[in-house]
Image (tube, rainbow, N blue to C red; front, side, top):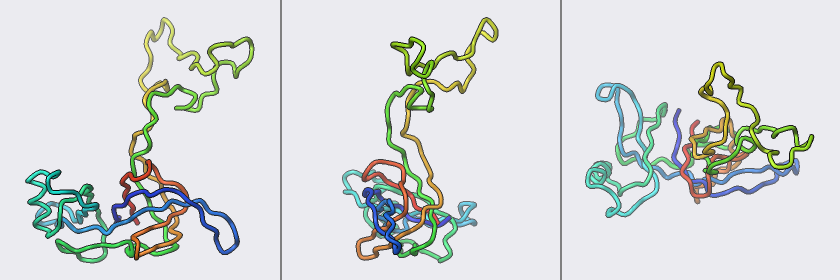
Length: 205
C-alpha cells in the first residue's frame, strides 16, 4: 500500500454541501523524500523508504547522516518504508500530499495516547461489582471474581485485568479524504486518528 508520513495537527469540523457538520482531523502529510529504494534483486522485495521532518545534523548518528547524504537530503526524524507505488521513484525524489485525492479512502496508523495504569471499567468496559447496588459501598469499580478456585488453582493467561492502557500502534481504516491543501501540505480526513497532537502517523492508500 503506497502512502506518506505525516504529523497529526489536531481536530476540527467542516460543513458539507448539505449543511451537515462533519468532525475531521487535519494532518500535515509530507513532503516526504525518497531516502532508499528497495529492489527485489538486492533486498528480496520492492519498497520505497521515505523520510519526513528535518532534524539537525548534530542530533543524527554518522551512519544516518551518510544514509541521508546518498539521497541528497538532510537528516530526517521519521523514516518509513512503503510498498505498492505505481510510479518509479529514485533517490532524492519528493512525494507531496497531492499523492492523495479528495473523496478516496485511506488507512491511518499511529501510536495511541498513553493512559497509564487503568482499572477494568475504563480499560475493558466492565460494569463494576453489583452495578452499584446491594450495599456495595467501596468497590463499585472492582473486577469481581476472576474464576480461579482450588482447581485450576491459577489465573489463566489473557484474563482481563487492570494494567497499562494505551500507547499501542493503532490503525484506523477507511477514512474518507475530505480536502487536500497542497500549498500547506495539509490533508483533512473524516473522523479521528490515533495519537496526540504532533504525533507521527502513516497514511496509506
